[in-house]
Figure 1 (spheres, rainbow, N blue to C red):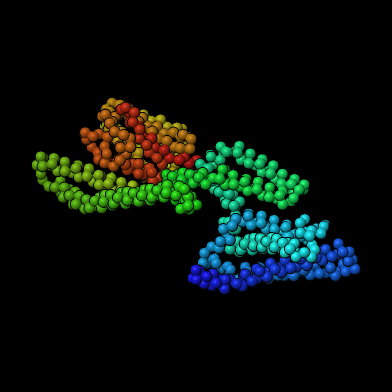
Figure 2: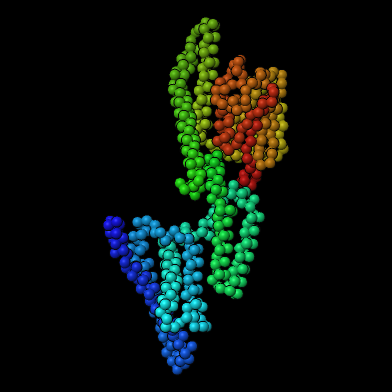
Length: 532
């Protein structure tokens, strides 16, 4: 108890300046209010008309003193370091938690109550305090007036304090509800749309209550009417806060928005993360943990993929050096006088070296395509001309394969943006796969046309083997459709083509329907104006 008393004593000693200023303001206001009331009383009810000029001057002087004392007190309270800086740095003041709307209501009520002291048409203030010499009635009136002034100055000073500290928006109930309405989640919007009927009934209740309050102010005691209006407004705000934009609705909406951000790989806004006071705080934290774990898993997967690409790149470089030496020695052997059988062996070695060289180059191209490091010379191309040029260069290979390629092109230019060299490589790989894996004696269909805002190329053929795999599987690296490996290849053609197309802003899809193998490649269409 002694320590508690010392703490209160120290606190009062440190804050006694503002307390003395507030006390002097209230005492001065009470005294000057009484002075004005008695001046009016003696002027109008004792008919002392010969002193009317003096009474008016005295009333004006009293109001001037009240204004000056109020100004000096507010200056002392709100520009005092201990009142602002110390309390702000040391923690929030208890009065700062009071809602702004409640302070405004108290300020309006107390100011109206104080104002009615000066405008009366009987010998009794507020209809129950006669202005005479009875001390008990005078003391009761002074006590009542002191409470009114305390509420008036307290609410006024707290409002000014909130304004100076810049926390009016945080303490305003209306502002918080407006902010919540503007930042509603999709779940909140759907739930509120189902309660529009209840909102209309609440608005009708508010209108009826306001009308009844105004009617009461004109017929009976104005205080009763004022309380009716305030009660109806409070019930309406209570419905809006708990029934229409409820806390649980907001928390459920925040949780669903967090899930949406996780699925779209976006950062979760800070205002949608629930605080510890929320009922669904644990669920929100679990979602955040899941989001963190998913990001770590994705980062680890990206890192692993990057290591694979680096390994392929380094392996390609390391294989090129000994392969170059082997090719050189093979060329020297070709110049020597060898037997027919040995010359055949050298020819086989040279052929296998060429295949190995092509495979190493494909590995190198694949690593650059999947890592996005391939440099693209983007220009406007015509899909029809690209296909015709590629088919013209592959005419010998088509004739040797025994397949027939049927083409169907749209007459108008099929313009798109891409790298000419890379696109030639993509189309060449696709055609080589069709020639290699299609059934002998069948036709290969190549089409190019415009569909909406897309330039589309389709390549269809009948496979010479049973395609017991998924379209996604055949797009992976080192995966071949011909699992028996009766044909040449190493399973990189489609993977390289897909990487190049993706880097140029297009898409490449594979679909399988029985023995029908179809590849669809799409690019955004570019018209003549965009070309210029």
